[in-house]
Amino acid sequence: MSDINQKICPYCGKEIAENDDYVVCSICRTVHHTECWLKNKHCAREGCTGASTSSGYGKTDSPFYIKPSADVQKPETLSDRLTEDNTVAGEFVTTALVGKKAEYYIPKFREMDKKKLPISFNLAAFLLGWYWCFYRKLYVPAFVIMAAQLCVFGLPIKGYFKYLTVGVLFLVNGLSGNYLYKKRIEKCCKNALNLKGVQRTDYISKKQGVNFILPIVLFVIISIISLIQQYLPYAQMMYKFFTA
Image (cartoon, rainbow, N blue to C red; front, side):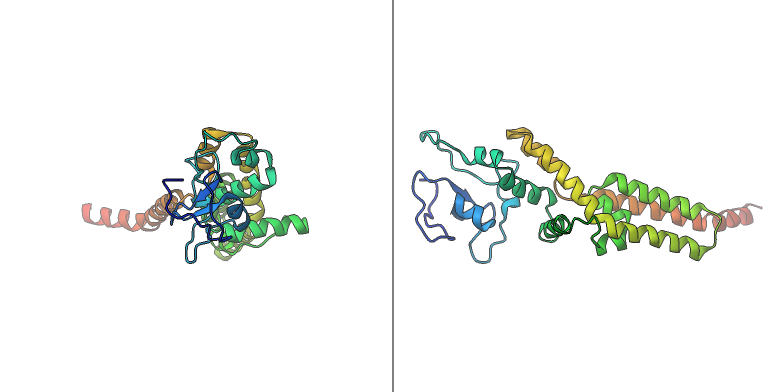
C-alpha cells in the first residue's frame, strides 16, 4: 500500500493492513476498509459527500477503486461477492442508476414494496408532467402524456375543460410516477447484474442518472411553436397591411 499515505480507516479507527482490500473515496481520496464502506455505504470522513455512486463506477467492475492484489491469492474477491450477492450488488447498482435524489427514491421504492401499492405521490412528477418523465428517462410515459396533452388542446372544447383534463393527466403522473420509475430502475438493475466487467459499467453509465438536455430542448421547441401559433395571425395581418 505504498501509494496510500493514510493507513487508518475513518470508520472503524483500525489500521488498514498491507493485504487488506480497501476502498478509496473518489472525492476526498480517504481510504476505508472495504467491509467498513459496505457497512457505512458512504465516506466516513467528516464533511465529505462521497458515496457509493461516486466512487469508481465506470472505472472498475465494482462501485469502488479497489487495490490491485495480483500477488495475493484470495478465495473470494469483492467483485465476485458483489456479483454473487444480489442483495448487496443490487443496492449499489440501484443507487448508481438513480443517481440524483437516490436518498428520496430508494426509500419510496421500499415503502411501495412494503405496502404492496403502486401509488406513491411525487410532487415534481405532478407539477412538471412529461418534463419530469423525460428528465428521469421515462421516455414512453413522457411521449404518452405529451401526445395526450396535445390531443386535449386540439379538441373543440372550452378552455377550462382542456386545462382540467391536462391537470388530471398530471395528477395521474404524480400518483404513478414513482411506480413507473421504480419499474424502470428494477429492470435496468436486473440487466446490469446479468453483465460483468466493462459491459456492466458501460451499461450502468448509459442508464444511470437523469437527462438534463432533452426536457430543456423540448421546452424551447414547444415554446417557440406556441409563440408562432399565437402571433402568426398578427404577423400575417401586418404583412398584408404593409404590402397592400
